[in-house]
Image (cartoon, rainbow, N blue to C red; front, side):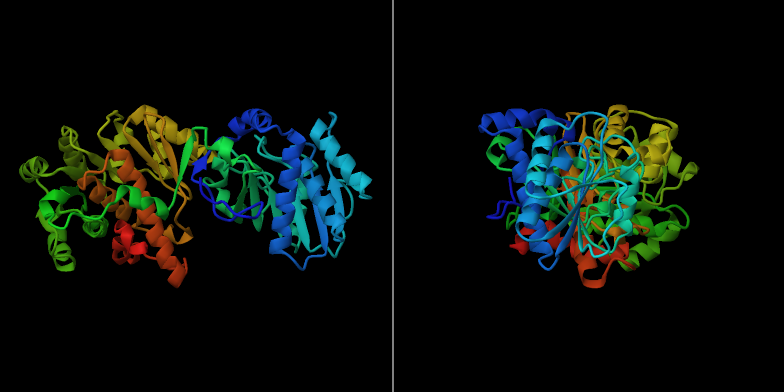
Length: 504
């Protein structure tokens, strides 16, 4: 685990992710193992959140604490009491429930009242001088859109001028999927407890979470004995996949990659994929494309081998290649269909992207030697559903794609997901909004293809490729911003990340 700090919270994050359901079920056992009560954990959560709020907003003097009827609200009561004891003015608004408060929450509420605090109803008028809001309304157990009065309080918090610190997860964001079925708190900071949840890292998470922080509540040693369900990937992981090359290595050791695509008018896609593969370290890169693209590709990147796509040349190239990439600029006409049909007979490691996926959706077939890299729209076509269905539960969609199509699935988007048939799943916690531009997927295809030629297993190549892709985009965005970021801007940066020893 990473992210240890003398503080009760930290901004660095661990690389293990668990489902919120698993954490809720395991929490009592974990606490009992350490001789702690659940109320003790609640006190630790509140103390960590209070410390974060003071650290980030030291000048704030009037806090509005919003408490729900569950454990999230209990954390809020602890924060409120600590703030009031420290001399901060606190207004606390709580939502009533039809059932009694859970025991730990009731204890936290009583401690707040004994400190001289007051509990105001959800309909109360908000003070005008509030300079910080603590969100303790809804926690990780939420599975649907927030109902009244929670929805109104969330909307009011988002309209307010004061920043919001969310406890465990912004209220309204689903911890399992990262979707927002109704309204959600837009937090400036979120402090999550015990372990990371997938909904904080994928789906719509980045729109609502703000800066994510983490507190183990003292359970770090216990967590280290548990097997994580999902892995969080960052640029720091690249060194485990990409070792320095042997000094006497030669191009033949680094693989032969064949890329097929670039129909009439789509030469840019195959050019970006091919150069990305070269930048990633593929030994030899061969492109079969439409004849009109041969001259421009050789002029732009003479290191490529470029030929016109025909049945005879394709068969010879398939025999030559170690790894295949098909899809960038392929189109869905007879030209692309014929190439895909011929390529399907190969048992070599293969990546399918773009129009290869659209053609696959028309004639589904399962295979183990393949990586598919759909964006949500392509994933919807592959699963015969709506794009909204994909985005409502990206983890479920990824698992369904693996079951139906086999091999490795890369579901692109904010918080790209990678999964295989053996149950491995990872979230690439890299990338930025500037990547919402044409050609980014072509660059990713080339990167993963280039890593495959260097003998990385399919799953590792997909994971490493997604991290290289997103980290390169983050590098560029840090210098020039996200608006106007081009896919080709990544190309000269890729070598920095496929040679991770440079970052030491």
